[in-house]
Length: 112
Length: 110
Image (cartoon, each protein chain N blue to C red):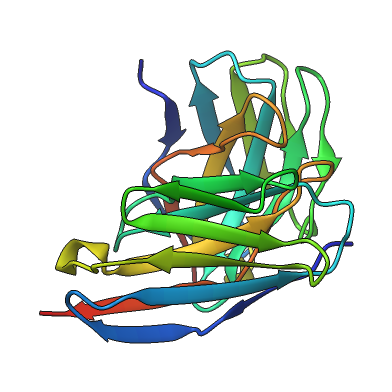
């Protein structure tokens, strides 16, 4: 089992460019999450999904969109990147909200 | 919504001493309280969790206590070792998505 994987691992964007981050899990988990991690801020939830075809906003959703067309994949999109979106992005999955979340290795995004 | 406060933000202890990290939460409906450890450059990983129907849970050198009345929970690490050096995050939720604390950077000095 690969667990949770993320693509790409690193990315540099110019302001205004767009990109999509891909998260994949092979544990048949219902719940998937996207977080951003900034120094001193902990993990903040961007969007999450409670199952295939569903998405919901988290704490910091502005500037991001998500889609979950297949149960195993959760995509995070940035339509027009801004320097404030420079961060490390983690995807996670869990069986239920009240069970262990398994995190991916992270994507380090820099927006110049 | 849920709000989680975590203290201290940094903690240094001598090898072999104990370390305690405390968190408070605001939503009385929260019923799941995990603790994650994140080593430098790595992903967060669960080290222990506790549910609202339990007051204390222990796993070798790690223990967590929960006081539902006061809405606070704590992580206790005994006999600390250099490999315990990392950032530790508490979280609260269960009925709603987890909300994480801002983290505690633990340094164990040999």
